[in-house]
Image (cartoon, rainbow, N blue to C red; front, side, top):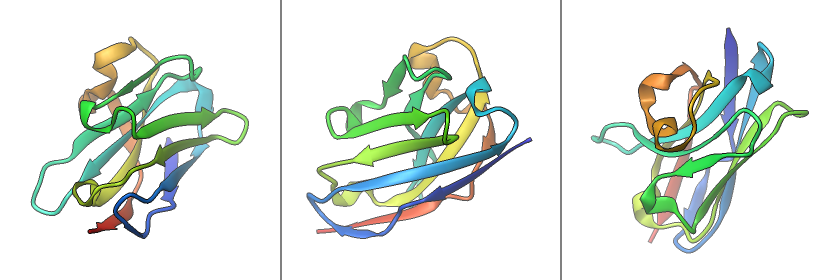
Length: 127
């Protein structure tokens, strides 16, 4: 089992920045690909960004490219999502997820590859 705890979400004005963190415990962190997903009220959960177990490969949704950056620290067992130039449409609950090592690239955005999920952290962007 892997336990995931997100933090860092808050209310921010449009154009602002936030850094989300996800602390992992349980099985060795470096065994897992890590991803961030988000869900807005009334909408389905969607993929945001993912990073391979080593950190050498990342993949992001088109709507966050150039604004959000995913990174990880395998010593601290933590994955981060740096979010810049935030927009009101970025509002939602952000979830951290862990999945087994495997192919990189676009497939990292497939929700079914992730076995463990955190409880989420709320991000609200005001206009």
